[in-house]
Image (cartoon, rainbow, N blue to C red):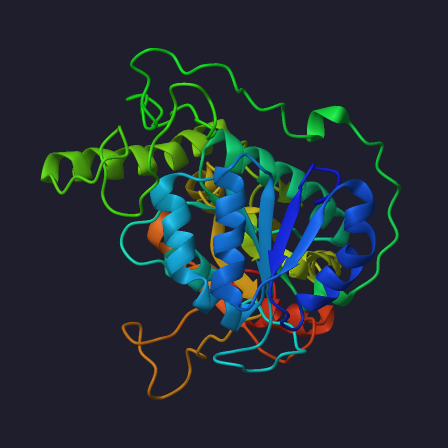
Length: 382
């Protein structure tokens, strides 16, 4: 996917399980004109990718949990400077060094909110190995169109698994468009934000009349350091508006099964196959259950609240920890919920339940089926 999208630089530091991806790329990437850069640490790898992108190259960086924590400051820099950057996080068990070789989906909140300050950006998650190919093409295009950071959350299951799929027919449209090196228009600024969309034209260094200094400090539309409250308010609004504009362009997700019922099971990432198999088994047993799988996590795909209200109950299934509601010390106020469940409750104001496990391996359909049977709303079949 990285090669098909025209990526020119992969900047990385070895870390399990992301290293399995770069091992493969190191063998083939340069044959297609790409470069693998093994930096001295995670921070330098992110910095190299940002620098290459600022210079007009198509760059991405790849890491796993602890590396994501180290890259935090650089990811904020990409958002603040509106420099296109794709980051792939191959999630593993945590926290800290955790379970390096085991699968988990516990980086979602860190990916979305781990940067300091207000740093709105795009977060996506492929559900299958085939989607891993295509999502890199989409991520590259979104990063450049919206001049922002795009995080792609995969996990150890997808990174080390093997699934055959038809060889994609390569399309030149997947590649980055040629750089615009024409002279900059008179009066054009590096951050000429469109007030409706928050977007501005990217100026590549070397364009006549386009010289400016890139800074992570608060800046005005000329990229000049500015600590004005009004300027900071406006620039923050523009960076946020871009994400809202993207959501307006997305399609509502498709429900797997009936559009109404007793229970809707919502998932993300590599749990898709197990969830759908469990739902199929539940439906054969007479349960009115459907499933929904999300690829966009920031912004969330539109129409979720409308979809949720057509079911008596909504529950997420995730490979991250959540408290059991029958624990005597757990209350509605202190219960730790699944990370996607937290996001959905906040975004839709729907009482989204959750079932999360951290077994260090992919969730099994029969375990999910038991969870479905145990969480069916009162009045539903059991």
